[in-house]
Amino acid sequence: MQTLPSANAENPHARRPGLAGWLLLAPMVVWLLLFVVAPMAILLVYSFCTRDDLGRVVFSFTWSNYARVFEPIYLQVLGRSVLYAGITTAICLALGFPVGWFIARQRAVVRNRLLLLVMIPFWTSFLIRTYAWISILKSEGLLNATLLAARVIPEPLEMLYTPAAVMVGLVYAYLPFMILPVYGSAEKLDNALVDAAHDLGAGPVRAFSEVIIPLTWPGITAGILLVFVPAIGMFAITDLMGGAKVAMIGNVIQSQFTKARNWPFGAALGIVFTLLFVLTYLGLQWRARRARS
Amino acid sequence: MKLSPIAKRPLLPTGLRLLNWSLGAWTALVFLFLYLPIAVLVFYSFNTSKLNVVWEGFTFKWYAALAENTPLLGALKNSLIIATIATILSVLIGTVGAWLLHRYRYRFARSIQTLVCIPMIMPEIVMGISLLILFTVSQLELGFTTVILAHVTFCFPFVLVAVQARLHGLDPALEEAALDLGATPLKAFLLVIMPCLLPAVISGGLMAFTLSLDEYIITVFTNGLESRTLPQEVFGLARKGLNPMLNALSAVFIVTTVAFVIFSEYLRRLAAR
Image (cartoon, rainbow over all chains, first blue to last red):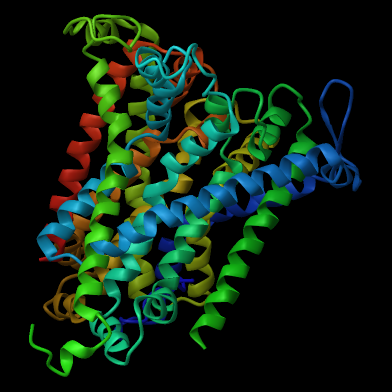
């Protein structure tokens, strides 16, 4: 895992701040405390509350919301979310790693052009890109019409609102988030190291598993973090492409804050999700440290 | 074929060439996967037929319908207002923050840096619900104010990091020279440092603007009814099903994105000089 950039390691002229230095920095720190730290703290408090019959939050201390998270129905949703996000991540890695690697090995001009081609989908609204797949997969959509016209199928197939459709949508949305970090670390990798591995008699497989993978690991982990975590909580794509059939943890959390009006339970789900995120992060970091030594 | 000792190495050059060739083919296929759906979307935005399956004829009527759709235009206006204010605030906080963290050796500098990075990697839905609860507890009515507060929170770290990257490449003696020549710290920042940072500030600002304009998940939780944004409107339309007007809107989005990406690439090159 990439370590966070240290603030001013490269500035030998940095000095101790006076009162003015602290006062100028204060707005930013206060902003972060107010809108990042405080909300998380309140979320934690809410997750131990209960609600009355009107859906209002009643302050109390109960573990019941967390107990409910571990009911079979929600565990199933949680498991499904992790599974789908895991498969999405694996497909993105399989599709994206060779691309990131290939782009990094090109001459500067070609490299910048190809990178531009990755940036365009990266910055295009994911809703628009999801709609593109809806127009292809819908029963009166392009793919069905083509297959019908070619007489491959006698009647339209239900392709949208299936788990496979959700997966296509997720992979399509998150693929650029895998390619870019892999490219980032592949670009830093010295070509001579790969050549050296070959010179020392390593075949492509060994060179790949013992030189390329460890050296691009920071990019791979960043990619996993950028795909896996958002994919778990992504309720918009699962909603649009899975209909009501494929509920994921994100959909359940969202419905607690809208239709179901059970904020404490939604908060507990949010906390569990956050813990899942932190565990993934720490796990990747631990794995990176082991790979380095 | 001559067999030199080098050529005896286990199939190295041919193996690599084959590998390189297949990597190239793979990359081409992945790009096809990334671009084909977008291309289809744009192509059918010019189709006369309401169902985007059969090509019936060329038309601009969906674009005309787009320009007359009041809910969409209203949402676009809201989105632009929110993104503009969020960008201005993000650029201010991010640029000043990056400069201060660079110039001073703060206590807790590492913790502050970590705190800055949290909104960038935190799951959006968790940020959305936690802010919703905060706004409800503090009895702020959901609307422009709350969305802008939320958007600034996840946008300014991107500006800060972009500016920080630029600062790392800057000659640390630059400010000292300005101060030695009699400039006040504020003057040195505005007249000497700022011009050097400008490309990074602008590209960070562009990033913040796009992030704010595209944000859906955090917006859903922190927005009220009267300030509905474009992504919320798009989600509603996409959920209803096929709609050629949405194709036209997508085409507009995509063209804007392409222009934006090319412009920020140009800025990046300017900054790299």
